[in-house]
Length: 362
Figure (cartoon, rainbow, N blue to C red):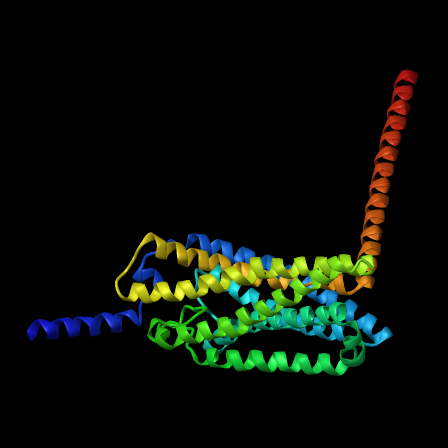
């Protein structure tokens, strides 16, 4: 009986300690890699995301103002807004990791920053799925597309449904505490005390927010590829742009979304094992891999602007014109510098010759 009481008391003590310990304390992990990898990665993503999405939205709005909005433009605009909402929070995370993982911006902003990451993640998946369905209907069922889905109404309604669905999925996440008891660290998941409810919640979000849309996208694009291969009368430009879009979306899911969802669930499972006393190199590798996939998941905000190139020929033409202007400016600047250098050499030669003549006269 006494031994049983001691064991029970020991379990209670260990459980209470586990609620205040960080994952690195339960199973020591070298975090030096993540402390320089994540801020560098987030800084690059924030710069590319702001530039790419800002340029893409600007071009989308200016061209749509002249020619009226189309269904694909509405979906692309919502995708760009989701990216911008996220990239504006990245400087705070860069500061967090550069400060040695010390959060200086309060608990509410910590939760909001972590929430906006998932809002961007699942809004991007939702709008990529919507764009894929739009392309599927336009290629496989063009008559139905012209009759029902060509106007703005269906795209606006679909965009609203995507945002509502994302908010419904992620609203419970805002209730989970992200700060540690000291109020210094801002976790991307939650404390050990909430793992019992947080792990099944994340698994549910993985299925509804990632797996189901991914299966829909795969189904749409497999059918699109089959139709494009069978139908030789398809416009070559439409064929090329459709195949490129398929490749881009598959790259997004393979690089940004799939590894993150795998290792996020594995990381939560490994934390459960650590709370039971397990600590192996495999668990440490899972934690490190999860940190890497977090950076890859944020990369979608910098890669999504590539879709603007698929949706807008005007943007391609503007970028080419801008590139040619920059090249011409650099060439003219180089010629100007070379001319100045040549003039200086001629002037120095003339001065030296004059000096020699003066010295000879003397």
